[in-house]
Image (cartoon, rainbow, N blue to C red):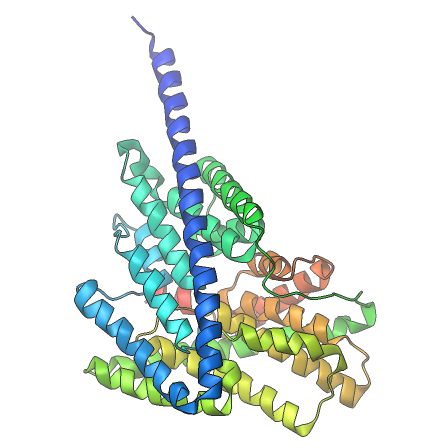
Length: 423
């Protein structure tokens, strides 16, 4: 007859074997989903934007078509079940509530349709919830997995973020800083395995960084300007958060969903006529600005464009989400941060003869704004370094991320994520 210690040892060995297998599958499926959604969205967003740029009628129609298609799917395919974004993940990890399987296709298609038809957000949150659902489904397959639901959800989220941004550390840190806020041995092991698979998948697919940049060496005399950028980013992130909460509250009082769609589509179309840079995730506009950043001159026209983008992006993102679009504040924060960094650099160069490097400020601004918007400085640090595949700015990015986060927290203690979970 086997002794109790040997039975326990055997049980532990089997448990870890099954957890490893689950993490391997979660990592593969989450990375496959993330890469497929990223490339599909990039391709069709570029195609649709090019069509809209050459035909203004399409620019007026696309937001209405996209929001209507999402409404149709929600009503007739997903049985009137509404997506709530990352709030769904928080609810699942904080209770016995599971993420149902339909969340995978629901967030996949709704995020895809939102962005390609001009909704001013990104696919990152759609990827996070779909990847979390993969982890949630895995935990239901074995009885002893039940107590590891949060760990398996975090493995899925970490793998999805890794595949999107080519940064394993960003994936794990996001799962820790934003989703779980606690750590355990099982969580570390499952996340490392899932992220390892996701990163191997990314390398095998030869995924390129989202932004191709040539970082120039930064100088210590720029540090005061970095800190100013961090403070402004922190304040602007509060504006973004307040916009999302304000417009969601206002739209929630509109009883008929199609009225929300009509209002959202009209505002989106009208704004995109003036600022086509706000179409979709806006990464196309960042890429264009990167090419000319270090030779740009702060003219009245450029200043007006930057200020207009910084004011309107939070409003358009909020209206996109409130009218039924699927997404979050990841891509908007990166977009806002890039143009905020560019504007601050050109401003101090023009009026204070600062001699700072605008391209560096664009990269640092992305991280600063993301850090402040989600209160996750280390996630923002490694995510943005992964976006540009360059760690030369690691130290200034870290400093600015901490400054922007604590500025935002002092002014307003909630993010879009924590406000909804605290209410």
